[in-house]
Amino acid sequence: MQLEALKKHYALSDETADFMLQYGYAEAEQNFCWPPRKLNAELLEKRWQLLGLSGSSQEVQMVLQEAGKSEYFQHIFNYLYYYWYEFENALIYDHTLPGMHQCLDDAQKVGLLELGMAIAGCASIEKKFSKLGLPEKYAENAIMRIAEDTRLYSSRTGYLAYPTSSHHWMRWYVEGKLFRIGRLEYTTDREAMKLAPYVYKHKTSGQVIALCRENWRLDRNGWQLWRDYPDEEPYCVTTFEENDSFVQGTPIDPAGFAEVDKTAVLDKSEFELLWLDSDLVPDIHIPPGGGMTVERCEESLKDAIKFFKQYLKCEPKAFTCFSWVFNPDLCQVLPESNMAKFMHNVYLTPQSGSSLSGLSFVFGKSDKNWSDYPAENSLQKAFHTLRKQGKRLKMGGMFIEAAGISNFNTNYYCCKYQELHGTLHGKEVFQYKDVSKD
Image (cartoon, rainbow, N blue to C red):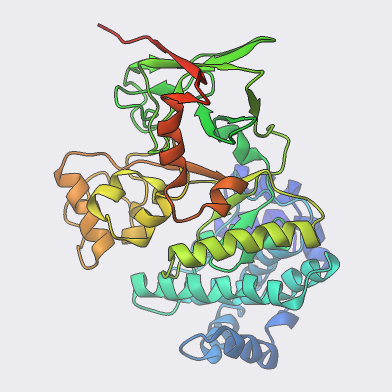
């Protein structure tokens, strides 16, 4: 089908049509097949059972048959499937795709079709992981993400459905850049490293200190300013300086905030940079499902090191993550939670984000005024407690390197950081230059 006909029928924008033309529409048409071979009744039911999905796979078949009566819909579905699961140069972010909601005005049917599309993509994940020489269990673990996202999304909508936004996570698997290892997922994408601070380790003691990058805009409490409040003036804008003898910058307390009124000066004969932006520091993603105990997190981190060494022939310098999960305020309102216990075992860092961070995951929606959102579980109640305390929601970052993993469940980073405020082997390890503002 000519793209112009599809554009006219669904009133697609010029931007969307141009994107489709540039990103795989012609190739998708060359591979057009209806009904989709990977969604025949037998294959779909087999996948359905392996995923342990509720309801019946026939629900997807029925909606697919109904929607497929429109030739235009056939080509939209075919393109979206091809883009996410077979096209070689897909953009995971910053894309302008058409949506099936533009074709159907029934959200429940759209959710079932999205589920069918994700299931059809399982074969592409299995193919990629096999090419990488990974045991079958890793593809099986990756595919179970479909069931987790379906359960979470269905609990919010009240009907069986899969979220459109989850295809981009599956795309990471298709590209062989995301791996599920126990409770956590790990990406090999290096772009996230630009969000991390500079991290230095003492050459003899192994003690670690993080310094802010240049031009971080911080408030008085040491948090990065919120992106949705662009007009706010920062309390300070960080600087970073390096020469042959030393580096200096704004230090970060492992509790997650920058010490805005101090500058740490590190002697390069004593400290070394722990990793470069070009080094492998896998970014952790925390999939839904609960049960994120410190034991399971520790096991996942240790297994991840083995995985990267054995199968990808590389050794991670550390692991990092940027998420609403690492909002340090949650430690105060949920001190006994798995999230708080995990945060006590990593080095927390400030991160720029939205004042609505986490709302979408916790409540399934995100509005400026969320005072009437439900408070049905401990996490929702905690969010409301922060709101009543006048605290904006925030993003947080974290990292953990080998020493942190080997000393997991000991509050390692906070304890070691306190030692840096004194002396090491009778010698002052680094100085604090007081730059307090009057």
